[in-house]
Length: 637
Image (cartoon, rainbow, N blue to C red):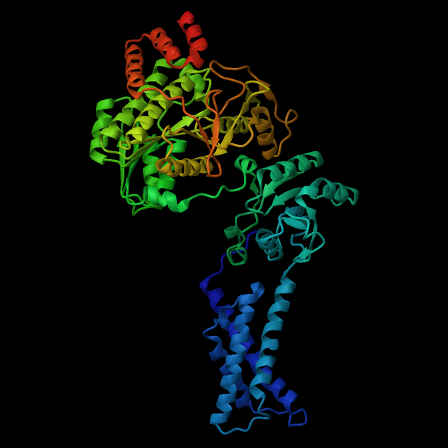
């Protein structure tokens, strides 16, 4: 049952009780100090002396807010206040006796009384707090849990358990991230081993019939591979894995004063991708964006919206948000208005396929830096609407680049995809064509030593983005399954949206400063590829269910344009390491921008005329890797 909220009357009564108790203890310190200094003296102490001792302490305690301390949650800062008030109160008491010409029992009276005050004020607070705490926390019938992490998160969680008599959990031990802490204790809770020893620790607890009901992760930045190992060990024992509440929810004052309850959080699928943080050049990012006019196309999408968020935090002079979807654009504009109200913004509804409209927008906003994230990205949808994909991804990118260059932009950043490597889909081939055009513009600008730089950044799937597999699995789980996977061997590269956008900004910094005459395509280090069926199984486990037992996984077969494996580099694009962690560079296959531009216009004209067969044939000639699919499309058109 939740505790009722404290009322002003209750708060005032608590202060009165605190004042009365502290006054009595202060009076007692006068008696104790006199007895310690002069044991043979008359035990009767004048009432006015007791009253002055109490008043001196209460007055001295005002700056340290002694009267409003919450004894139940007395901690180090409270005890420091007690010590300071004791020293000040003892000095004030001795000064009062001196001014009234009352002889002190001994010259050391202030010191002895200060020590007596400290003991008499601190001990009851500590004892009262200990009386309120339950060892390990938890009410009768509370679920036993094993904590993962032995740092500040575990400390907060254990404190919250100890301060809540009705807590639904009881900690039976901890697992640290290193082996050096094994055998030690935090709040009298033993550290049973490291996270790497989880299987052995659980086996020992099972043998002792003390197996917990769940593993609770208290470490906020637990590496994804460690978390995956914990989940595998927990699944073997039939345990669930959850995260501790956020630190703000573990605030003792909130728990006690507002009736908050400890609620564990589910582990997010993004947590399983948690990799060591790549050191980022934040100063370089600030120099790139701060004080500049920036435009983000596709600002309503997952990547575009995150770009807008991170760019806004760097302080641009103007942030333009361009999208052809009204609702998505309104959402990100409203969010930025709340988060960064001081950043001037302009929300523009426009279609990148409309060259006239785009040139007018660029001429008005005059962006110095353009992030081009607008695209059609869903492979089966583009495969079913091939001309739309070509008009948006290829012709649209050319329109953005040409309009930005005409408006005097210094740099444009193209968000590309691993599907542009050896493309088997129109979506991938159209993005490859966009890469070719931007690389041609960039090469010409580098060789001339002037003009707009075009920085291309290529990466794989963004976890949880619109249209990705994660929201699909979440919907299917909510309906009880089955989870549909196209093929048991399908693999994809994944990265969280925040990580991807941060590295895009990093690549933009490096690309704008690079002196390579030929430039290159930046490729984000995505880590090892993930099997989609493994991702499905992990999401089922995160929901507290068992794969193939509680929820079926059904294989549906590859869809048009899909590949089993995606690649980040073409065979003729040897990877070149950069000095920046997390970034690689693909050696470009250069092409003349004018030639590629004219070809894009011819493809666009064929698309507008409804000549899909001709458009695909031209696309196959420009992107030879796609020729086989183009020929198949021509035969079937």
